[in-house]
Amino acid sequence: MTSAYENLPKLVKLILQFFFGYIISGVYRILRFVETKNVATLVVGILCLVTGIGNAIAWVVDFITELFSNKITVLAD
Image 1 (cartoon, rainbow, N blue to C red):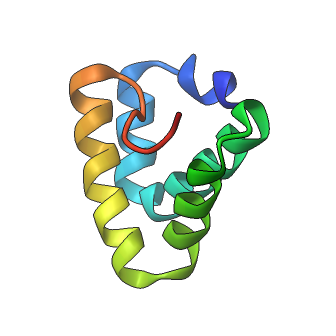
Image 2 (cartoon, rainbow, N blue to C red):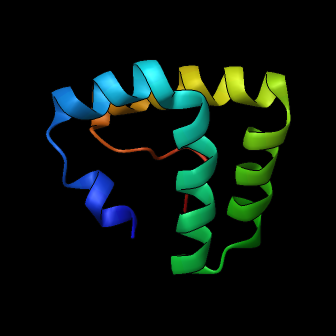
């Protein structure tokens, strides 16, 4: 499921992350949990969606990781 997002061009992902990163970060991690069954990824995904500070932190971190490594990597394994 996450491969559809990962296969997007870098510019498209950066634009999506800039405008909708507060939603993408949580949803991506929850979908990643479905694929990998890593409970920590699920917890972080839920916290990203529920808490305001989690959204802000995840948005910045995910934007930076998309910019440099072209993939959401922090707490998404």
